[in-house]
Structures are given as structure tokens and as C-alpha cells.
Length: 158
Image (spheres, rainbow, N blue to C red):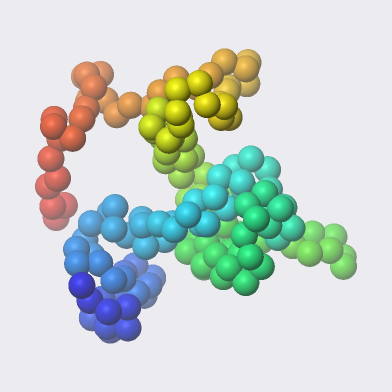
């Protein structure tokens, strides 16, 4: 694997990549949000967290780590700071790129509901606006048939 400081391993926007396959979208995505704190910050922003204090209280993350992750997520274009009134701190808001992670967060949540809890163990449930549990997100082909790792393959884009 290449080192982070290898000048020949630059991603989009000049971001350093440390992946053996820099053309892989999964590797690039993990470079941006692949640690637990980044995804929890994105999750909490989707749930209404806006301030540094909101994120710290919801996650329990150390201040120095939160500062670093907020800076990285903002630099990557997933969060932005919006204007606030005079003398007030600028709150964070998801950008469209950050909002586009919603299906990823939902899929991780649903996987966790199935595999990270013992049967009958209490956990939270994502519900829609009417209070009904959100149906499982599953990839489907153009004809509507279910897709799995057995029915798909990766092809290099030109």
C-alpha cells in the first residue's frame, strides 16, 4: 500500500489517498468517511445536530477528535458552516453530498438491526413520517429484480 505522503497518490481535489486501488469508489469513499466518528457525525447531522456541542453530546467524542473530523468533513464538502447572527457561532449543515449519504446510513442501520443485536435486545428503529418502520433498502436491477454480490461485477469505467 502506498504511503499517505506519496505525491503520486493524489485523489480528486488533491486529497492524498493511501489505497492500493485509487480508482475504486469504495476506497475513495472510505477515505472520506471511513472512520466511525465521521459516519456518526453525518448521522447526527441528519438527525438535526448543528453545533459543535450538539455533536459532542450526541457522540461522546473527544473535543480534539471532533474538531479534526468536522474540519475534514467540511474540507471534503460533506458539511458546511452557515451564517449565524452576530456574535453567534456558525452552525454546521449537510451539503448535498452529505445528504446523499442517507441511503448509506440507512443501510448500515438496517444491517446493524439484523446482525449487531441479540434477538429481543432493545435498539432504535428508523421510522418514516407516519411512524412506520422504514422498509429494508435493497439494490435492484433495472428490471426490479434483486441484486446481490453474486449477481453483480465491477467493470472499470473509461
